[in-house]
Length: 398
Image 1: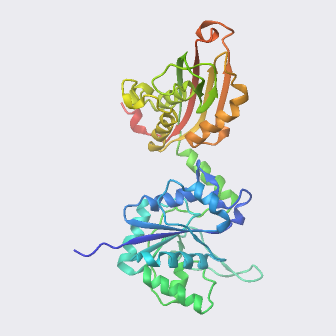
Image 2: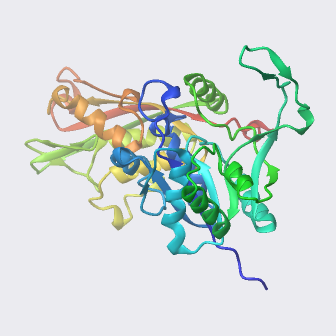
Image 3: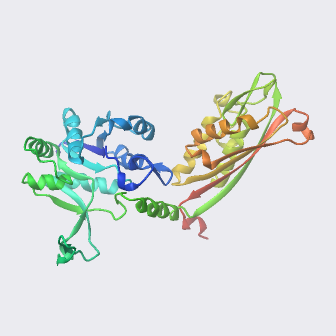
């Protein structure tokens, strides 16, 4: 049996993306609730046939990069160059010690690459040594001169739009880049053009219409709308929780330690705000309640921090291909006073759930000294969660 090919990937993310408008480098902007670079890298980091992902970044973006892809598998990032070509060369040199057989070179500004395209790239490079994904041209293309007049109309049937990841035998494309550097050639717009110049025959394989490059503000608007249209199943869930006071000097509320004259009587840390939110999310998913996933009878949850319960509920949404649109919690108590800590709590919920703080609301009310909350015997919380899931016709079948 032949030895399996070792495949590495380079993620080119050193550009500034000025045509994408305000908001910083486009690869660190969000689309569909996730950064562009995270979406682009995730497909390679999670692919079983890619053993190493080499990011190439602008040194000024180090903090942005670390925050955006903290949970993904990758090599230490290497600094990019003044051009895309120089950045790719830097990535190749950084990978040389890993001795890959095949390298895939992908633009971080293409966040919608799929595992299927990556697999096709690996297979094509294994067969031909150099291959790129392409899609057919559907519009008629015109060649114009300096005056803007049409000079020619190329035959559309032979035209293709090139995408990434472009795939090569590693040693061959590395030598091509080294040769271009020696000869002072820095004007190639993609690696296929450089490979052609170096005398390689570049094959093509099937690309993907969705694997588009984000370039202009209009691209972001269009793709946001496309992603939103795929999440047409909008659901709302509600939650409620209550805990009595006992001995102690603080309570946990919405992930924040709040000094108080009493503590909670609870199996976990008793965070009624987070518990209510967990139930709201699970309710929107029609996925049981907090007690069914984290039963109080299980000793391992004794004293547990409730942030892990909220993270778990959010992961259940993500696993279904969904997004959280809004989280809201209302605390019902006489004391402690919630108002001064409202934004701290919002920020903590946003951090735990991975959503923007603008999608989190924390409110508070009293019960006008009525009932157990009015007598300061405990605290109650209500919550609601709005989520968006991909529409699944099977869930509506008879």
